[in-house]
Length: 171
Image (tube, rainbow, N blue to C red; front, side, top):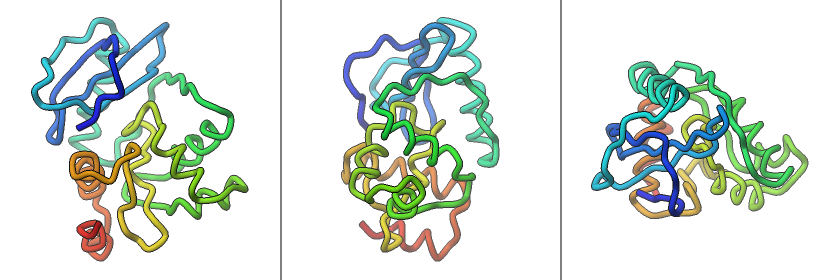
């Protein structure tokens, strides 16, 4: 998978498709990274990290689970506007980069860039954003098998329709 660089994780734990590292600062989640399976796990250092872990595990049991965590999304105003739109996409649904762009008065390419820069994927579900053709598009500034495998796993977990699932198999 991809780690976004050195981080002071508050917890690292195993999920079916990777390890997840969460950074919690000042009572807010500031970052979630998908890590290699070789990364060592770490017990939660604080109550917020423990709660984030609990909520992610609840989502893994029930894809309709709605996260309720304090987040601090650090980025430009444009990026934050894209992330707010992404957060409105319900589980099991998808939108295209172009649809998000029209919703905020932008173009698809910069929306894709903002999606890839999402510091808290999964909780802010950028995996629910697809290319206009219905193809999977990118994930975390990548079109590689590791990140796209995570995106496919999450979409399948959320019950994306079988027609869409066939499209997800295409790169």
